Length: 177
Image (tube, rainbow, N blue to C red):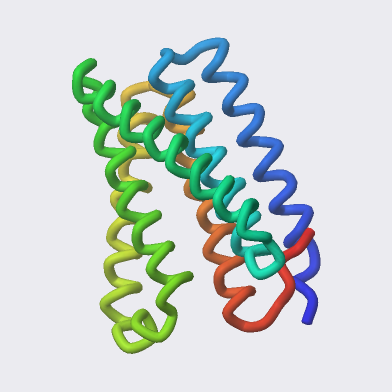
């Protein structure tokens, strides 16, 4: 069954905006923000590859994905520690909330039966994390930190697309663009 009309164009737009976002951090952000943004983009692309093409990957391809994922995760953790050292508390909180979202997303993809047994709890936790991330968008906007507010809103949209991808996969749709 095909994806909903316009979904693939939506995903391509999100990727283009994330690339623009990365360029903005390269021009106007800190080294820590650039590292953080680049690492998350790599993780997003790897997740897309793995969920869309995982069954077709050879063992060497899977190994390469795992090694690159490990390096990108190290980048995210280094940025998170950097935010704490720089006392950039909103950035630090944001990073750790996203780590929690990714953990839940990985559980959803890898253990769908376990998630289904605890669906209400799972969605409550996911909703609470997204609500906290949404509050950070508002906090950055209130502080006049527009690049951070934009970045946070864009990533919420990107993860909305990821969640749609997961639902698409679980319902038997093809997510290949």
